[in-house]
Amino acid sequence: MCYYEASLVERKQSKPPRRKAIFVTKVLLKSVGFDTCTCTQVQVYEALKAPILNQRIHQKGFSMPNEEVITFLKKHLQSIQDNDTQTYNETTAEDLTLYEWWVTPHRIDGLPFHEFMMTSNAERGAVFGAEGKVRSPARFDLSNLHIQNYGDTAIASYTLLISTASPDGVKVASHNESRVMIKRNGAWKVVHVHKSPAWQAPHIPS
Image (cartoon, rainbow, N blue to C red):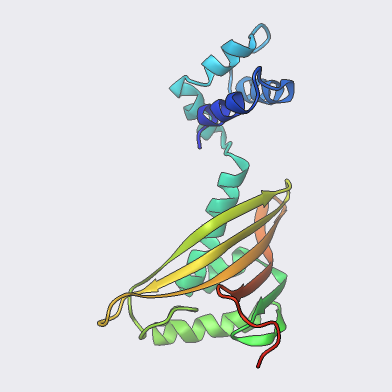
């Protein structure tokens, strides 16, 4: 969503626009070189229509908070699918805690467990969590992605779909995930992961 689209949403939700939203928008406009000292509310929103605004925003390195988190999350998940341990380690905290019910019923701590698993998968040409033969094309999708953003902390919850091509057709594996991310020294890191079945599993195993 660009800043103009975001402003339209704000306008629809509140008529007239909320003062806080106008203030934040003016700060944004001023930071990329627009004179907002004498702007009315309407003029502020009209300024957001200018294509040069979004151009200057991207040149300055600004992005919507959730957009930044989603971009990071996809980079992190892609590293798992690619068995890219370097990127995985760069995007994951050393004190990671994780629950993967189908791997082990216990909490997994730290990075070495998955480093070993990803290295093994890379040697076999396998994708973690995929159902299918090795060296088969695979992709992931995020269904019902929801981001809770608290500044330097964000929580992503979604259903992870992993599709694998096979001679018999495409097989899709799915489960629910929550990933907790924090921003350290300007860089996002995944600090906790919780996975659960995407079906109504019994509370107590039979």
